[in-house]
Length: 113
Length: 107
Image (cartoon, rainbow over all chains, first blue to last red; front, side, top):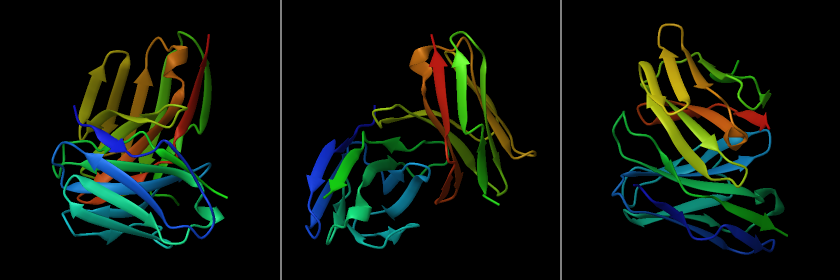
């Protein structure tokens, strides 16, 4: 079974802090994704990566950056956290084959005070 | 118009009822994915399909590529089926998410 592990289930940070959210997958998937989920807005793609050191902006990249130094790890970085970044963050990974689903982590509920 | 629309947005059912959740879309796709998200936030992959029908336990997913429509059915629904169900469209590396259907099954 694919395992996608996010480093924290709950996180509380202060405005202006630099925040790191980590995601690790154990199935050698090429593609990894970071989403945020807010009430009434569904899942929105922030960034994705299709290979080591490669990254692509999703629908809402502003205020975020990412790092993919190793295939199994995809980090989301909030350079200077703001209260409007309070959200549920979900990481997913995906083998680049049309018949394979995405696998999601359990999510990190991030609160910015 | 949204490229992917789910209906209904919210659904309340009594235990044992047959449930249907719909996903209609307006773009070409290579596959469609049904996800289940429980109140705690964790997301589970249910089905990935590009044609026909798939069944797993009490869950059945169908897709009609010509009509650009997919349905997720739950037979003999149970309170533990209460969750948000999300359809996701795939076309190469592009993905589009439905807004989700919130299902509540009452005992």
